Image (cartoon, rainbow, N blue to C red; front, side, top):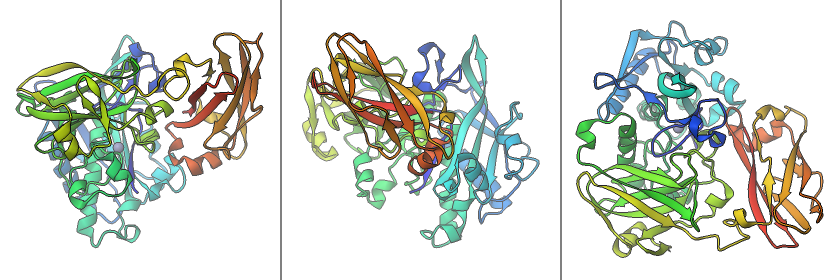
Length: 509
Ligand SMILES: [Zn+2]
C-alpha cells in the first residue's frame, strides 16, 4: 500500500492547520491556530514553482516537465490557483542526497516553490528513515508564511518531493508498462500539489469498503484524490476535492449557487474531535459526496462545515477516522484518539437517534433527507452520537474518578536510537478516596510501566509512573511515520475500586 504524507500537521475538509508558535497543531492554543493559503490577488493565487533538473525513476526531464504542467492545469481549471514556472522552470541543479537540505530545509525562502524529484528514493530514506522509499510516494508541505502579530497569514512558499524509487517499472510489478506508471505518477503529483497549496487529506465516503478491500474498480475512481492512500488511478478530481480547493481558492463558476451544511458532532453534548462527516447526494451518492472532519476550527466543540454542495437532497453520515490515518497520513487537526475511534458509523436521522448498520443505498431510502436549495447555508445540524452513557467507558472520561496527565511528549528526541528512554506519566485523582489503577497498552513490547497497578492513597492527589520506551529503532519498525510526524500510543487505565476506565494516549511528536 503506497501512501502520501504531509509534513504539516493537518486539518480536514479542506485546509492544513499550522500552529504559529511551531507547536504541534493538536496542542496549539486557538489564537495561534491558522489555516493559511496563498493570497488571492487580482483574482488569482499565484504559485511560482521550479522543478528538479534531475530525473525521477524511469522518467526523463521532458516527460516530467510536461506531466507537471498537465497536472497543474487540473487544479487551475477548478479554482483560482495559478501555477507559474519561474524563470526557466528548473531548480538550477539536480537535487540529490548531498545537496537536498539547501532546497528542502533552507532557512531562507528560495524565491520559488521547489518540486524535487528524488531520483531513486535516497532523499526519502534519509529524511523519513531507511526503507521509507518502498512505500511513501512523496510528500509536500507549506513552508514559508507571512505573519502578523505572531499569527500566520498567507503561504508564500511550499515544497513537494516525489519518490522516484516507486516510479521504476522494476519496483512496481502492478504496472504493465511505462504509460500506466506515468498515469500513477501524475496522480501522485496531483495529490502532492494540493498539500503544497494548503489542502488536507480527506477520508472520503467509502472507508469501510477500503478497509475491507472490497472497493470495485468503479468505486476506486470515485475516491477523492486527497485520500491518504493512492488508490484512485484516475486523474480526475472528485467533488470532495473540488469542494475543498474552493474553500481556499474559490472560483465563482464552480461555487456559484452551491450550498453548505454546518453544525456539530457531540457525544452527550461534548464536542467530538476528528469524526468524519459525509454528505451523500441521494441521486449520485459516490460521485457527489463532500466531507468535513469535526472540530474543524480547533475550538473543541465538534464543529463541522461541509462546503460547496450542489443543490439537491443529501443524507449525512458520521464515522470514525480510520485508525491508520495518523502521522503524515492523518485526516483532521486531531489524531484519531481512542474515544473518537469508538464512535458509531451511523446516519443522521433528524431529531431521532442516529441509525447504524445501513448501506448508503438503504440509508437513502430510510433516513432523514436534507434538501438544499441554491445558495442555502443550512446551520446548526447537531449530530449527537450519545455513545458514552455516563462515567466509565470511552466516552465518559470527563466524569471518571482520575485522569492521565502529562500525556503529550513534545520532543521526539526523547527516543534514543538504540537505547531505552524514560518518561514520567502522572495519574491525577478527582474526588476523594483511594484508587488502584491498572494500566495496559496495545504495544507492550514498546512501552512498559515502572509500577502497575498504581495505587493512589486516600491522602494523595496524584501518582507518578515511570514509562520506559524502547529505542527509536524499535519504534520505527512499528511506526514508520514517526520521523517528522507524530505517533499516538493508546493506553487504557482501569480503577478496580471505582470501576472507571480512562482511555488516553501517549503522544510523541
Ligand atoms: Zn497526502
